[in-house]
Length: 208
Image 1 (spheres, one colour):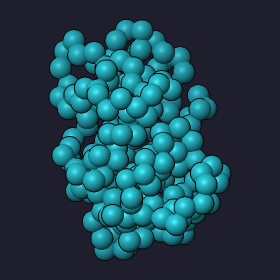
Image 2: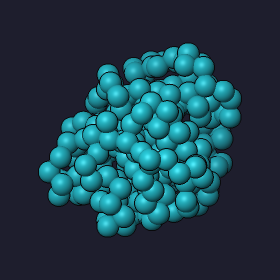
Image 3: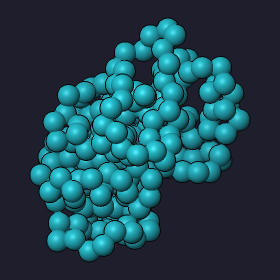
Image 4: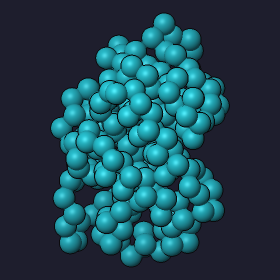
């Protein structure tokens, strides 16, 4: 199948790209920096911005699935997540297609905020709150403007190995615990959902 990955040069996006190629898919990537992988006959790189309509269209046209893995390390307020969501939705409408859309946000976005532990709420308030305000808007825009989506909400990310064994929690419940999970296992879940989507219209949280 044809998979497009927005935000593919590092972190989960890079691992998703590598794994999708290993599974034999045709992969198109969009990132500001060159994706640091060897040349591959099934890899097409688009260097550009997730908030530039021409770049987005060049990366996602013809895709069966689009995986959004953009991120930021800045604690400052941003509109990158919501801006890119608007542009992606407009691009999909203009193409007249209906690819599966798998979007990486995080546990703490949207209504999951109230289910975080007290230490995580403190961490979010100090360092991540502004980014997550915009991630929540990203989720809202996509959920209200498209039909074939899943929002992936991992817990605290680590650089551990891929295990393929983790919990997927798709209901918010009092006392639920969403802790650590490796970026590699988040990539495993996202590629699996691109191949066989079983959580469309849901907000699966990932944790061990």
